[in-house]
Length: 523
Image (cartoon, rainbow, N blue to C red; front, side):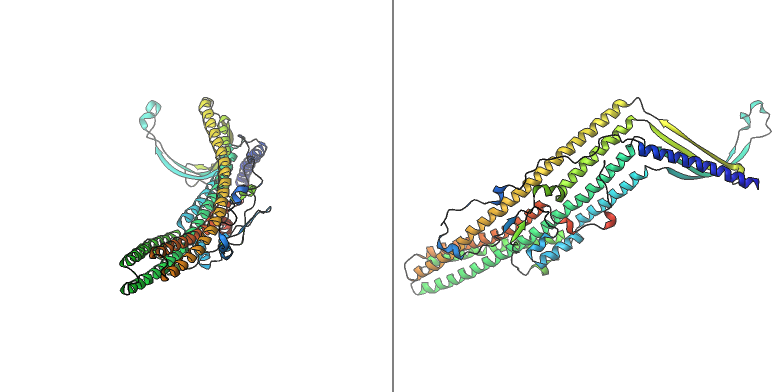
């Protein structure tokens, strides 16, 4: 009965000692300082609103369009609303009210392979956080061994041994080490890993916003090209009928072969545009398929039927510049990278200080298998140790200087990213508003060109003008109609660019909750 009691006493003694060291170490870590600078969001002076000049296009001279202006109904004439409250741009593509576009957006968010790579990068970064956090606690390993040894007879002093000695050794137990993070070096490493995880999450958002914008832009451009094809075919049909009429008039002496040749040349020129436009439509369809991670041509049935260019909504809320700091994921990535760099300064500075380690072991050692797990075979040890590299301070100081330079680079990159974000929005606003003014002028041109075609046709039939004026009027109408379609396409595409610049879209497609742990910023 004494052996079990002795065993229990020894085991309790070892456990009490280990727990005591762990408790003392934990208190010292909690009370200890953290090397390196603490993170604070850098202050930036931002304008109260986006550039007014970007939202106010130049005014046209009054009366430039003539009386036909009243007949013009411009496409995409909307108002820009500056909202004091945060604007909701999570699913901005739905403002176009196009079910096919909605379908393409959702499929791209689910299937795109570049986005899938970004999701795996988040998982990898999360595992790095787990690995870094494990360094805060003790490491325990189970060990076990058996060995048989035989000594040399000639190595025994005096050669009095009757033969070489032989022995068995049986060992099993636990070995533990714990590096106490007195100065916060390990904690800074954890903070750097956490910030890297946030950067990976925000980088996925950057990729997602870019992806959704590319899908919407390609889709709008495809519908625009299809509209150009329709306009070209309509004009070609009219021109073919004109050629047929002229040939009939040549027989009656009303027209000339010159007029027929001129009309045929114009018809061929118009027809030559169709293969080029069809090639553009094919390329855009194939590009959309690749964005959805599908083989080129897999979307032909869905997209080959022409549809109208998605119209823009009546109002577009744009929010305030200060909201970009929270909404633009590239700005968030920049601040995450700055947090990583600051934490790494602390990791480097930790090498200036000594490292304290607690080592412990508990196990059984015996010379025979029968005695292996007896109480008398119990062995244990525990004790602290300290190490301090004091002759490489020059190298450590250099590493600290390198990390500080990296932190300053990250700070400057953050500020530059914010300025670039403001520039992106102002440039998108300017392009959007100016393109609407461009559309207004082209719409007037189309109305006037139609009127010119009708008048020239009447004058030619009455013998009051040359047929060349008819051809000129028809060609001018085709050019203005084609330009109007391209401007209509540009208005919708510019709105996509504006939504991208405002940082909308990633909020509607978030990774699973397991991939999005709650992370506090480094202190």
